[in-house]
Amino acid sequence: ELKAMYSAAGVSHVLALSGLHVGILSCILLWLFYPLTYLKHGRKILAFLVVCLLWLFAFISGLSSSVVRAVVMYSLYTFASFCSEERFSGMHSLVLAAFLMLIYNPFFLFDISFQLSFTAVFSILAFYPLFSRWLCIKNCVLRYVWNTLSLSISAQLGTLPFILYYFGSFPTYFLLVNLVVVILAGGILMLTLVALCIASVPMVGSTVMTLLEWCTSVLNESTRWVQQLDGSQITSVYLSSSQACLLTAVIICFTTCQWQNGSLPSICMRCWNR
Figure 1: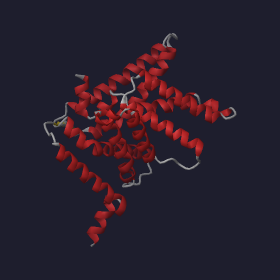
Figure 2 (figure 1 turned 90 degrees about the vertical axis):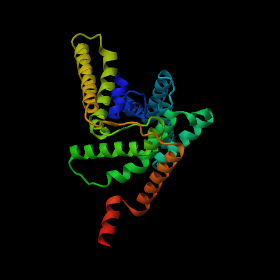
Figure 3 (figure 1 turned 135 degrees about the horizontal axis):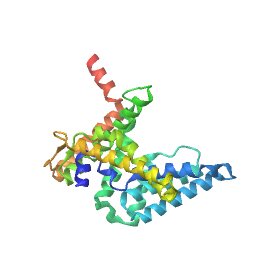
Figure 4 (figure 1 turned 180 degrees about the vertical axis):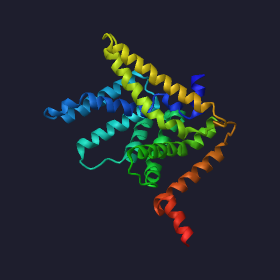
């Protein structure tokens, strides 16, 4: 029931271990072990320690495709930062991670989680810079809202052919619930790690557990509220393999036009002026 509710709201990625959790965990680890940077070669020690702990997390969690993809990309990014001062391209890291994973297990290519994970990240790298530049917002709260919406639209746009092909359904209110999901998911993961460390401490441990339960209930109730809205999910829209390929080709053409000719608002303005 919980899985169906999260799926209908378009936030089922919260229940599955994915790059979101790896990213949150890496931020927490970098914050916890930041004092190591004051030592000689401390930054390298910190980076190596975080990579090792992330790989430990990947093994403990079962080496799912999405987690391995995220840890491989983080490891490549960290290794590149040691070898070169230039910024390492996220697209290069994504392609190299896919290449290494397929060398290890070519059958990853037919895994749904592998396809969705890499497609979502590729779509974010391709579309997010375009969408985020559509509006120039100085207010930090409104900028967070717009960046979150841009991130959600980017991921959903790239995975749309796969979702319709495999599942035949599409969540219509995914933008609404994703505004709070990222914050709550990060808070839940951080509070869980804190609770594991200080659960036995009187008063403090119970306070952390209460706060953890409250965050979890808020996340579940927010998802349930969105799922109960009218038209929260479009169902029975299965695409054939040829239709999914055609839709993918349209999205790729859209991306190419965006990068070559500028953002969509500027294109519309030039057409209107003509």
